[in-house]
Length: 123
Image (cartoon, rainbow, N blue to C red; front, side, top):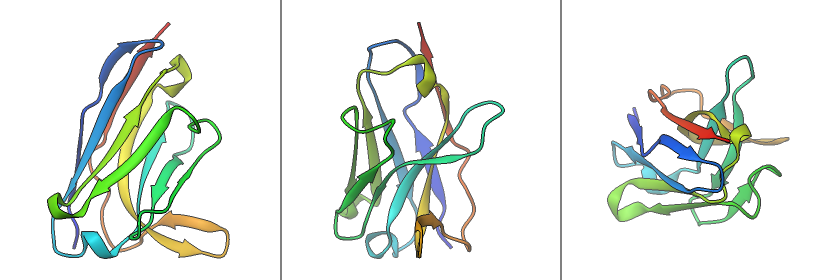
């Protein structure tokens, strides 16, 4: 089972930047796709960015041009660089291993979610 720990959140003004990190336990990290999700109060959890085991990336429209997802398999760590942050980016951010479906990436079923890291962007 993979254990995920997110960090790097905080309070930042609009236009600022944050870099989130996700450290995964276990030996399977390099062999799985990973993603960053976020959940704002009263809203459903949404996939913000994904990265395949080969490094192919995809972004939600809201993140394109501002966020960059990356991974360091040697460190079992994934990152999300967030620039030009907006108040609507305020949410708890989670990392998760992914599974492929006919409609795109979805959270993997067998591992638990981490505790997440809070990102708050003030206007």
